[in-house]
Length: 297
Image (cartoon, rainbow, N blue to C red; front, side, top):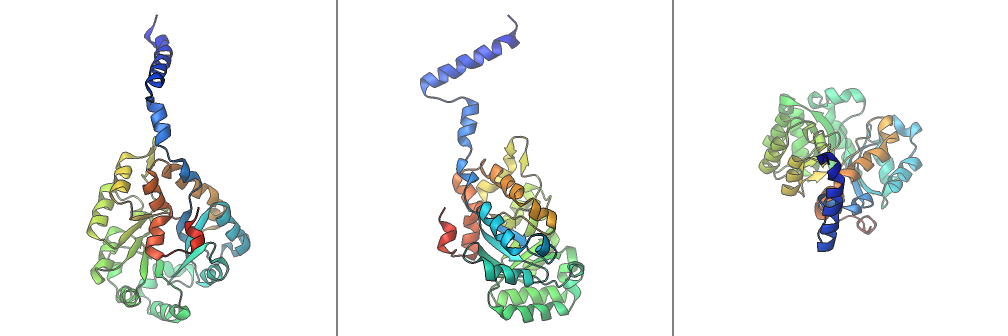
């Protein structure tokens, strides 16, 4: 009998033998290794924009329902202009838990000019007295543009008022931000997009105040789920990662359930304690304590 025709029978016999001895097959072990709680555990969305563009397409009541439907119990809220964040703060708490960040943009063009514009600090100083901001960002900053006087003033303002920074930046800019304030607390938006896992590990090791946010981040998963190198990274630094939707355009709001669903899919590949930290416990540690409603499943 050809070997190929024997394989199904052999597999069945192996399965029976394993069952009789109380052991599991490799496929069963893999199924057991997945974490079913990931499908329902709370999520903290650490990169959310409610800019002016989606307000007609996705009104506030629809936004709040979207969070509830996807068990997103906390958000790091930013907007351009900051009016969208004001609306989320007013409508959201305690469900969802809203952590507002002050964005140094008035219009989209500010993305490429804010770090050289003296009006940036004026905007921050006028907006900050609202009293509820926990950080500044998300801001876009690359290379040695981070050496500007405006950037230095923003970092020093954050240090003075114990604020975090949310930086959409390359490695060079992150290094420059820490050069201004070695004790800074920085959320690295997108974790550099495509920086190799070993470079991410190097940055996390070098800068204890750096937290990596994973929206649009490539390389985490492959054909078999979370890749071996990223499993090692999550195992080594389970307290240093956050999730995010990055709803910067209307299409991201339309796709919100799928974005959160994809996170849940690969969180299920991780040990439950690691998955919980990445999903929401790291956010609670950074921004908490969270309202009681957030922490109870």
